[in-house]
Image 1 (cartoon, rainbow, N blue to C red):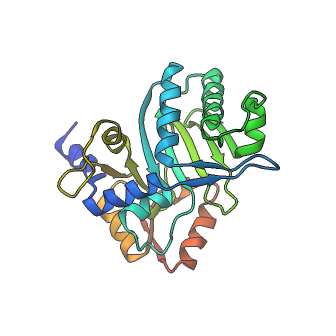
Image 2: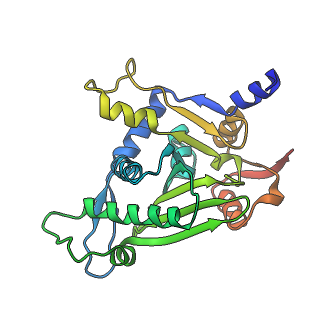
Image 3: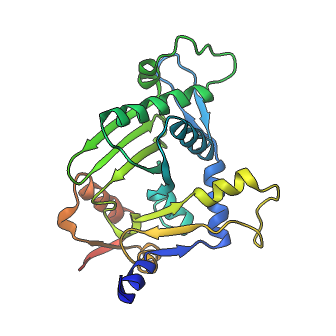
Amino acid sequence: MSSEDVSEQSRRFCVLSWEQVRRLDAILGESVPIHGRGNFPTLSVKPRQIVQVVRARLEERGIAVRDVKLNGSAASHVLHQDTGLGYKDLDLIFGLTLTDDRTFRLVKDVVLDCLLDFLPPGVSRERLSPLTLKEAYVQKLVKVCNDTDRWSLISLSNNTGKNVELKFVDSLRRQFEFSVDSFQIGLDSLLLFDRCSETPMSESFHPTVLGESVYGDFQEALDHLRRRTIATRSPEEIRGGGLLKYCHLLVRGFGQPRRVR
């Protein structure tokens, strides 16, 4: 790899400040209700808890997790609180290898089994099958498997729209629509600190947390976020909800787009 390639790669990353780490820690520690359909009880889930439980169960079943990242509007909120966008969904990305249909099914079964851990005390777990849990608590279930994309999504229901979205990614060709939603924040160092440190975090003692912009230039994308500028790369590759997201940005006061080569 040439020095130019190394420099280009390094521009994708940035170490979070103490204030940003504090915001990240607060988001991971906030209880989010997962609303059950019908008579099923509401689950109270902290993002850091479900990440730790799901990761541990996957590894117990022989599926190695490379890393876990916070993505989307919540990651943008961590990096710049006054984005004008707020955040709703909590997008959590688990990097792993999805070799075949069996692995896809195993990931889904593990997540559904983990929901049992968050049931309120006194609720009988004996008759709650994976299918029952899926019908009760899963808002959306997506599986994509083709030459360029191998990933699955399990979105847990929240009546206010603040869904916890667990995305399991082997490969994903297009990871963002616009620069302001291109941020991913690694959670591994913070979660390791949770497990291993007996000393509370402080400005002088906290883990190094790395942020990445898959847009390609972290500082440029962060500047777009601060200035409320719409920018993208290779817009012809955007699929699905790109137009909806573009309209959402305009409504929120973001400026007219400019194409970046």
